[in-house]
Length: 270
Figure (spheres, one colour):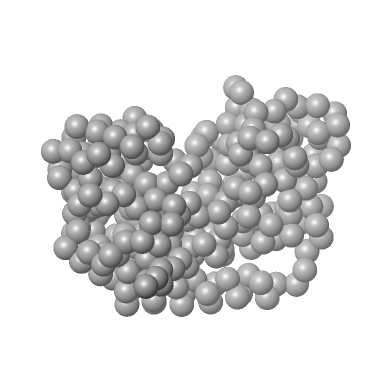
């Protein structure tokens, strides 16, 4: 007899997770650490990365276990978690494999579009005993998403979203950030097969762009960078809040509202 798989409790690898209200959680994904806290699950968190900084007053009491890439595996072992929450983009597979050798449950996430946050919240709430809080969060998300979709159509635009310099790096189609931009009817240029490709500035590249967006993370671009690059390129270059554009989970609610601000910024330059 085949047992139906509950899609709500199935992670990005197709692993079905059982409810675990007494879980001890190590979260290696900053945006999901924030979501767990907002769902009322901070008391179950026994470890987080140094980049898990929101909500600041809550996470201060949770032990750090390194970064998203340079994880202290032995420290996690000593914390004896029942669950570790990871992400395909942010955490490295060799590290996750090491953790899987002694952590009973590895929850793998991979949101690729804003609406993936609904499943993410239900997954976290369903596994860790916060179903009601997750349902309320999803209702708020759906309301914000409907408000965004209700905006009058905007002109299609091609924008280059920069996440690093020296070397210059951007995002490709298929990433969460590109999906956020697509909610405005914008698309990113095709610069190769990598999810986060390196690129060089050229006349052909610039000629095909309506605007350049410089993100405040992971590289800390500033208004000074934007002003200098705009003078160099001769097209609009705008600084955008990287957390609002790239953090799924809790920040996705504010991120949907922030998209309206970004749209107004770009339209104001046209």
